[in-house]
Image (cartoon, rainbow, N blue to C red; front, side):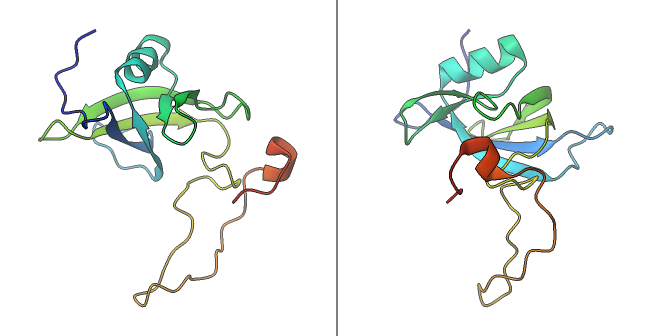
Length: 134
C-alpha cells in the first residue's frame, strides 16, 4: 500500500497514541509515543491492532505481544505536514510497560522536578515482564 506521508531518512514516522473517545474529534488521554515504518503501518491497518517499529530491537513490535495488552485501532489521523500520525485506540489494561495507563504518568513542576505520582498502576509489571521496568 503506497503511503503519501513524510517518513524520516531511516524510513520511520512518529506516532502519537491516544485513548479513543466517543466524539468525532480526539479528546482522550495520550497513552504513548512510538515509531512506525511502512510495514508496521500496513500491518496496523490490516489487523486493526497497533504494530510499531522498535528502534532499539530493530524489529516489528505488535503492542501486547508479550503482555497481552493490545491496542485496537478506532480511527487515525495525519497532521497537516503529513509527518506525524495520531491513532485513537481502545487499550487493553495499561499502555505503559511500567504498569500505568499511560507512558506519560510522571508530571513535572516548572523546575523540571517530578511531582509525586498519585495514580495507581493498572497491572504489576514484574508479574507481566518478570523484571522491574526501567
